[in-house]
Image 1 (cartoon, rainbow, N blue to C red):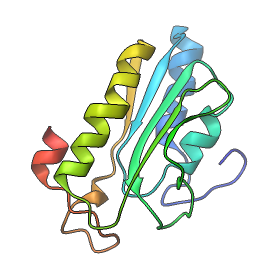
Image 2: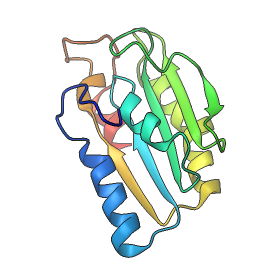
Image 3: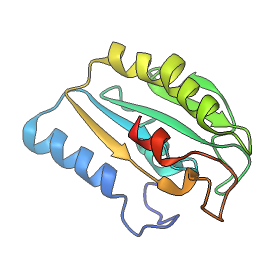
Length: 140
């Protein structure tokens, strides 16, 4: 979150990259796509009031950090999209969230750059959560 370190990183590398790209290259619209098993509360917080940033997230419902339980479109400008997946969800739910909700919104937003928060901890073999995605889902 703004002003407070939280999570598995001291610095939010994606949002540092977004801020740099917008300041240095003058990008008017960027999209942050987040498929980490944990909700990206920092990415969401830093994008909430900014109409130049679309944040789209799929994540497991009900785990740390305890945010992202709502589903749909929100944010001050309707540019925050959240698709929480029930525990034990796999390929079908993951791909459906991206195919039917998140990617169409990204396309409609027409970003000049796309940033990925690519947490591969939604993998079936990751012991910290219970999503069951596979390598093929991340490649897809």
